[in-house]
Image (cartoon, rainbow, N blue to C red; front, side):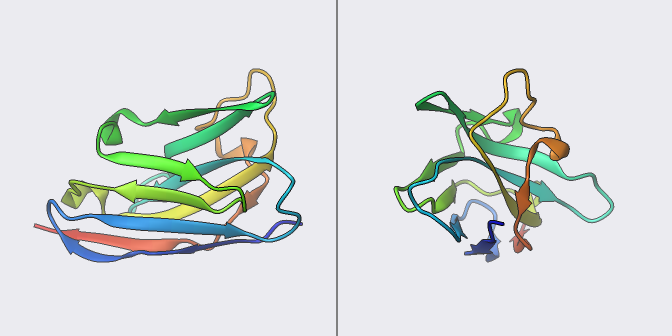
Length: 128
């Protein structure tokens, strides 16, 4: 079992920046694909960004709505980051970290069911 803990959420004004972090428990030598999802009130949870492990390399993917503004990164301790710049009110949501060991050929990163582990979420609020 892997425990994910998000931090770094908060309230900012339009155009501001935040950095979210997601720490993972367990063996730091084990590698995971990791993703950020978000869920606004009365909305479905949607994929924001992911680092997908195909064999030994990682591929970073983003939702169109955040390309050029958000940057995902992971360090060698399996801490996953989401740097968010130029924030907009529509970015307001609870942000969740997700992880799974490696990756499965043909899996769709935006599918919630593809991810084995989830954090409890951290709130991001962007005011206009």
